[in-house]
Length: 68
Image 1 (cartoon, rainbow, N blue to C red):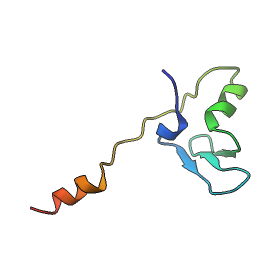
Image 2 (cartoon, rainbow, N blue to C red; image 1 turned 180 degrees about the vertical axis):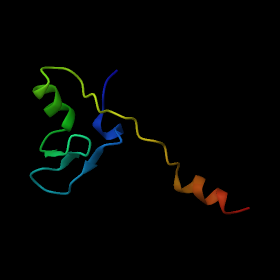
Image 3 (cartoon, rainbow, N blue to C red; image 1 turned 135 degrees about the vertical axis):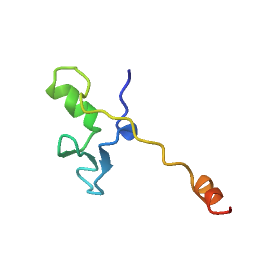
């Protein structure tokens, strides 16, 4: 399985210009995507903390609930 940090529950944007990406599970910020840092540290293995984000639905879907 290919891991994409943007689809992980632990990924977040830090809004810092020099460290724009972060991982809450491993508690670090980095310049590149966290998966690249993890692969370097773990000698090519994928991240073990990866969890798929839960789908929240779209704004349109949420509005349909209140029209009843």
